[in-house]
Amino acid sequence: ELRTTLEKLHTELEHADTLDESSRRLLLEVQADIRDLLIEQQGAAPPPVSDHSLVARLRAGSQHFEAEHPTLAAAMRHLGSTLSNMGI
Image 1 (cartoon, rainbow, N blue to C red):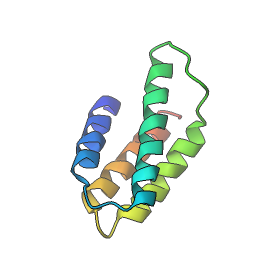
Image 2: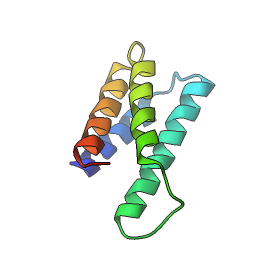
Image 3: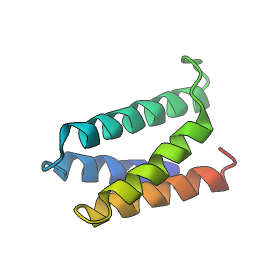
């Protein structure tokens, strides 16, 4: 389920072409955190990522994008819920 949710979020990110600089930076930070988390789960050890900061960024991002990018916001909320349910 996590992989499917990440793929959906990635697709939404690719289609979100009307983002301002701060929004794009937020999304890049979330993508980097997710990539590091996936690497960590595969057994490699990247620099530590605060899992709580990732979930917090996903929540903040979903609120930020709700009006102009509701599908992206929904994908971010779903990923945050998935990670929380996994204990991350």
